[in-house]
Image (tube, rainbow, N blue to C red):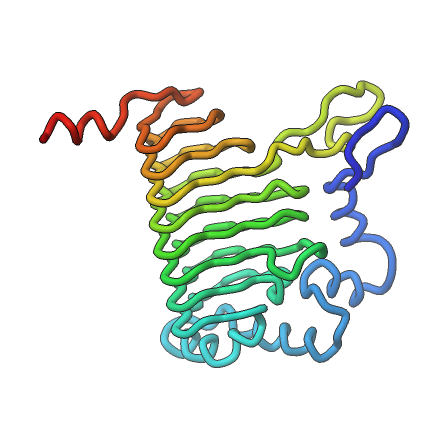
Length: 263
């Protein structure tokens, strides 16, 4: 995508995705470009066979996916569990560590042709039901032993990465977005055509805890051991071990203070 400037008409990511799905080439080539991530007929056939295994419930489905799915990915560690009805886009750009658990209905969308390592999930991570990790020319990394609760959305777009550290606790229905703001300077074209602002993405350092329904906006770093209370909208950096809450979030207290009082 080309960012908006005074002398050029931008091409927005939304328009680019729409064109990739509806225009240019055969239906097969469009499908390979948007979904499979490869023009290889052999790769496409294997992807299709694996997707047929996706809805199979129970132990049979788990065993079949364990046998056949690991070869879909760029790398896949030992003991990975794939539950039913998982949706994959460009799986060769997804890298999974050991003992990763991907629960029912998760979506892993790694559409970024600029790198082969778009989504990286380290050892012992759990993705609960209906988690979405979406990359539109962005990247997402999730550190070891982190847990992502149900219906959380992690979105990275246009070179604004999202990095979640190790031992993070992400509550249900959270929204973490790198690159969530459009340029709005021009009035002669719709905002969605003006492109996404670069904000540097989101960085959640180790041992961060987000309560339910927390939103973390682009450009934010939550430092080690910090906490966001349920429903908070975090739009500014947080120091280590800070506890914040509210809309927008404000620091309520420091964990260090409570610890020192107990000594």
